[in-house]
Image (cartoon, rainbow, N blue to C red):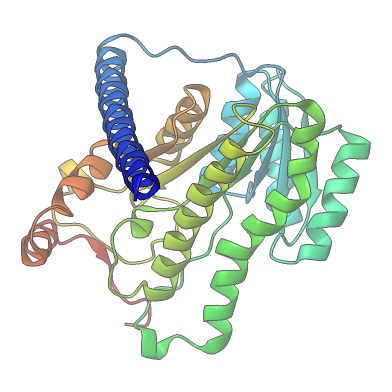
Amino acid sequence: MIEREIIHTTTASKRIFDVLQDFVQFLLLFLRIFLEMFVMLIQKVLPKSLKDISGEVVLITGTGHGIGRELALHYASLGSTVVCVDINEKNNLQTVQKAKRLNLGDVHSFICDVSKREEVQALADRVKTEVGPISVLVNNVGIMPTHPILQQSAEEIQRVFDVNVFSQFWTIQAFLSHMEEKNRGHIIALSSIAGVVGLSNLVPYCATKFAVRGLMEALHEELREGPYKNMIKTTTIFPYMTNTGLCKHPKVKFPSILGLLDPKEVAMRIVEAHRSDTLEATIPSCLLHINNWTRLLPDHCGLMLKDYIDSGVESDLI
């Protein structure tokens, strides 16, 4: 009887201790969150501190035109060694020639279909031999068929996933070892505002861009918990519609506020996000905050706001 009372008392004491311990941990968590929010507020007011990237070896996919080309030029202008990768040899060489005229960072051209895993593995070996291990990977390449889901062929859907999603898996797997060798690195992925909000005529494209967001969030967590914590960083970018030719029939209700973005401006913002170690960024920056707050409202409120903005793409089959 006495032994049972002792066991009961011991069990009750342990439960009380566990509850108090959980409560203290919660208070510490709340305090840490409050301090982090305070620090972020101060950082918003103070000028951004941008790290020097002149010694980095930056590999960019899809450098033949558009944002990829502007990224190559911008990184080269900052003194980085730039590895330009594209499936179109002629366009890629034009980018390299433009970048070399800057007479700053070294620039290299490699031809590869990054949707094919074997080609990406071979590319990683060639780059390591001819240039050296890379320290920054920018997954920029993407395609965007724009018509209703029932008019999307099986081949189109497969291709958009191969290029927009699986290519990022293949490059991360192939080049992560380069960064591990250097004990530092940065992986930058281009999602899209279509990876934050679903849009008509873009069902497969939106699915791929939402997938990129999930891929990068999980990758960041894996790197954060693994042996390379704080050594290999990630950044996910969600640009609004950009004037690269990818949006064949853009629909814009307020062109003075939400008109098509300039690829040069987008590239500059991407590099800025890289240099400030930003985890996620929309371009313009306000769109991520608008989306986050809208998701807290009832569903119909978000739909009313979307209808009011009325931006997206028309079918390219019209």
